[in-house]
Image 1 (cartoon, rainbow, N blue to C red):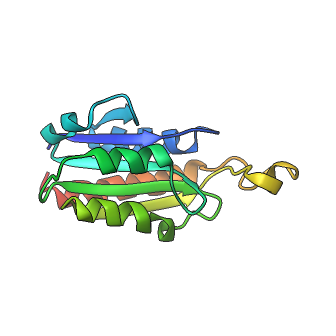
Image 2: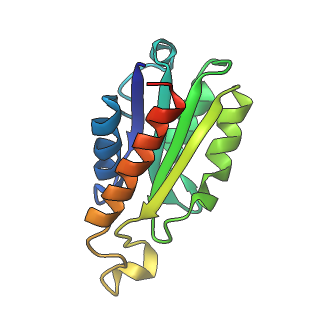
Length: 152
């Protein structure tokens, strides 16, 4: 299996922590959004897409990247995110874009992350210290489950 994880981690490094954790388990290459041309993802068997959540959706750079990808019929993909709520419910838009490109979604992971959006900044933010060790352990379990879906 040849995995890659493409991610956007903009404000507090929340998503980068999760991306590194999953990459360590999978032995995946880590790529920040915008660092690699969309065509280069064709060589990978499994592609992870993750970012923080902004206005209820993944980062705009992530969405633009997926829009620019060629159709990768049946290519396996997973989605992950960090947010104030830590919900996979925010994955809907990105998931729809990936399905339209004929990806096979093999898993989704979300956890809480330190959030200082808007008025939260005045109060010092929410979820300080997140993702924490427990969140990263859950990310490891998620990645181990992905290994099972790949027949490795």
